[in-house]
Image (tube, rainbow, N blue to C red; front, side, top):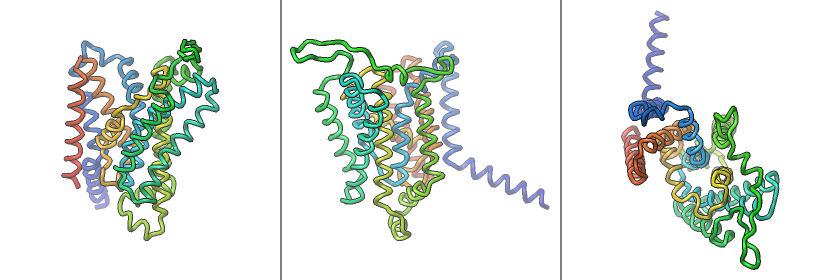
Length: 337
């Protein structure tokens, strides 16, 4: 009798797991990997270098998606992540390349700038009751303009313009080489490790800290959370501030990969970050979601992009396919809810 009850309980748990967002995300990942096996571009998909490069290319999007996960769980949205990436990439390049600051000094300043900008969105949303879409849209435009203002509308590279209009070339700061390097025998890039660090930090916040429970409570029912004593305004500022902090890290990684600070960097990256979170299975309604779903969404998008790339599929087709996948993912969530 006990064995029979245990079997029924195990079957019930298995059935519940198969209906969960995690199971669907794993199934989606398996399907994408199967496509890579079938369309392997003459064996290119089976080389480790292809997977390493995929992880390197998608890690910046993944870092942005970590912050986006926090925001979306609160039932919000952050359209400014791409522009904040561009702004912090330019700021980091100016401080390290043109002003000669060490990485130990420049990185905290850039982190602070990103966190302050992200917190500004949270203040506009919580204190002035501006819709997240509008508040972050305004910051998106402002941050892009700020990036162009401090850079003079030009890329910040090792070619430094002098007062007489000529250019002097300076050496690339060591921190650029360190962030853009590979470790473990060249098998894993530092940018990928930084992305995984962001995943772990986000997991600790959501699963181990009280403010992580507050984030879920606000997304589930903001008014009920407020009546329960949750500091709703402070938590929203916290979530958007963390998103800005992740943007700063992504901006540093972007600058290191491009060896310059481009004020146009990060254009449409917010769409990729949202796509990753949604495809992973986190609901846009808020209140539910997991950073592990975002990790799976990042890998799914990364593999999809890489498979299309190695098979010489044009960028226009890749963009259309990504848009179609986002719509299908949202429709699937709507049906499930």
